[in-house]
Length: 299
Image: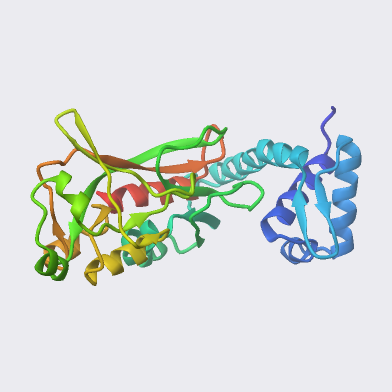
């Protein structure tokens, strides 16, 4: 296919439509009419010989072919922007809009207290944090990256490992005063344990204890099952039961004595945190800055 300016123009309009979620929003961003945006998309689809968007009177979304095309070409648009910035002597400039999907627990307890510092440092950046337990399709949702706990699923996304946080077993002093403190992990079979539902399987996570290469599975039970870390922590603090939590984000609760770590002699179980973003050779400066900020915040 021979290149011409109309192709690049059409790709730019497509990127604006996906980012804005509608022809009207794309038209406002580009200074065009909604009908002009519609015609540009139609010309691009005709040039490529494939339908890029499924659209109704109420919604639009990328087709499978459109999502693949968008994932391939949008990094090239970013590369053009980076090249233009380089010519102006601003290769490290962090600017524009960045949309990141962040796991709610990490967003609330780790990122939120420092986001003001990040925004103050990069005043030409517009940051949108989308908190969600489900990552979904980054490209179709117009997201630049996602921050998620757990091993990354098989995909074409780039996965950047940010940390491994310890899994610890905790209880509130009020619970221990009523029920006594378990001395060994095996004692949990006689205690009330708060279960946490694995969003991938729909079943509660199994409880394990790791130390020196040894893995000890323990069957636990309790009347309360949750799917939100904040709810689990709140219930545990109130004395509703024993919980397994990520050490990241509960250090203050432990330091203040609101929670007690029960088995410090089993310290080796960990859970990873990853940043996931569309595959590209050179991530834009705004994304690199945010991921570096996440790493620094964790440290």
